[in-house]
Image 1: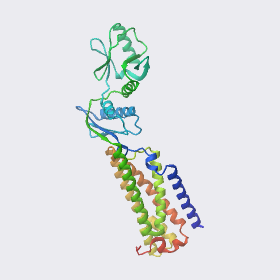
Image 2: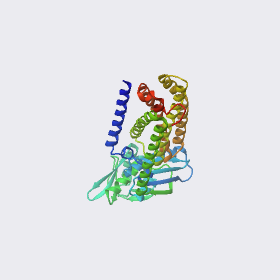
Image 3: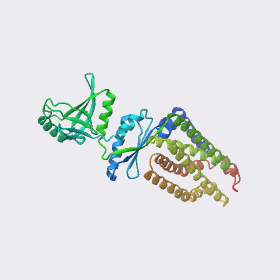
Length: 404
């Protein structure tokens, strides 16, 4: 009866895995998990603060950079702090590197100045900037907050018939003459040659001004060709590693190894599902983390089977040997997995860019591998307890002397 349930469960797992692969067009990883800079290609820029800077200012600058990255339609930009005064910006799939470099490096300091050069308004008085089409030209409509509205109304009344200059990063954008008092909190920047240029400038203004000036110290462009080659190489490496693991378990642990391979299939489906749910970004180090966590999952099964052999060698019946083997292996597996997860957390917290991807996939993979090794493998072994294959120790576990 248990043998029938085991066969049915394995059949269900195989069918689910087959449906998963079919509906993800044979590539569940790269079709549903966004690819990072090293796989997809794109742009990496390292910016450094000019002069002394506080940690709070760097955190603010990081947040502003993240908002600016959305200008380019990048679904998974990676913005991270490096050291005390640097920010790394990674934009996978970027198609216009020059525009990206120009935009993310600007300080975006908006100023309204009187004819004498006195500052009337700043970007802090702005609540929204919206690109629009006006006649045959393109403009940005500005909406001011309450304080800005009051200051602008007073300024337009004072400078009626005179120009008020609008500057961005000390560059004069437009210098309109005040025709009437503006008391509704609206202003306008004109003179754009395209709607796209106006939209990018509006997004830049909405993103806010950087709290400190930044300079670009490194720019690295990764080609799409290199990314495609990396994807192919990583897929081959992953498939090769998994194939070797499956063969190793079946050669050295026979039917028990086959059951461990079934548990490994469950582990892979759960891992990919979690990565998709968390909107994780796949990088080459991330692939390495997946493969390493798969190895750790197999290592847990090796420990379990070693303890199981010890219990069988001591003369315990199979059911008792399974329970005692898992109980004796639990402490060693838990200690190993917890220490690995702690190391991954440290890497994620202190690391940057691709290191975070490796740490994230490793930590998630190890956590899931612990569940599948202790839970799924044990359940499969208990279901197989009364089958013919399990009664024959040599077919089940490769013998009790460790020989294959």
